[in-house]
Amino acid sequence: MKKHSILFVCLGNICRSPAAEGIMRRIVSEHGAEDEWTIDSAGTGRYHIGDLPDRRMRLHARKRGLELTHRCRQVTESDFDDFDLIIGMDSANIADLRDMAPTSEAEGKIHAMSEYFSPSARYDYVPDPYYEGAEGFELVLDLLDDACLNLYNSL
Ligand code: 4NP
Image 1 (cartoon, rainbow, N blue to C red):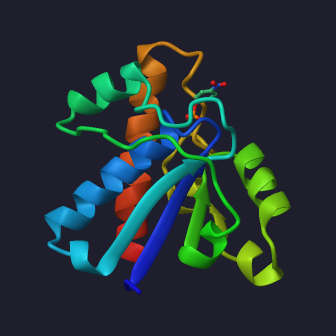
Image 2 (cartoon, rainbow, N blue to C red; image 1 turned 180 degrees about the vertical axis):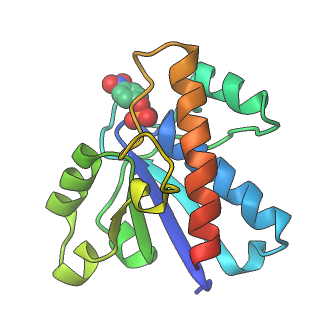
Image 3 (cartoon, rainbow, N blue to C red; image 1 turned 60 degrees about the vertical axis):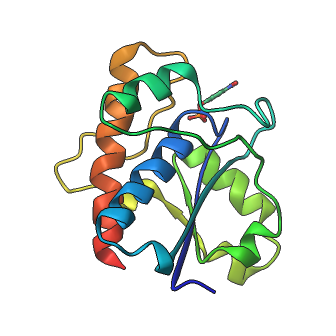
């Protein structure tokens, strides 16, 4: 078992959570700590299973030097055994995860990404960019850059 294991969760697993996974992987790799971390992402929904992240998210991430190659999958009950931290992007994700958690110990692994936002953040969740324009994707990447670094430093 690695020292830290984190699963990022959103609805579709093609925008927010694969971006969080990619950003976290980069931070961990910049610290030469890959051996200590398991990082993955998943969706509460099943609309896009097997797909690469949304083309727009890949485009905006690439502009920041990040290649997103995750393949969409749905959250499973075994994720609650396999990961120490399960981080949802918004309140709907958190509610869905709580419904799925098989035990109260498993439920205790669920956290909101906003817990790791810097105090200056203008949001208290990571907004779904799927029906938004370019600025929605940039906003998500800005929020995730900040939260992932704070998360890394907190562990
Ligand atoms: P995500 O965004 O939860 O950040 O991956 C979405 C992607 C797809 C859908 C909804 C949200 N969808 O309804 O297909």
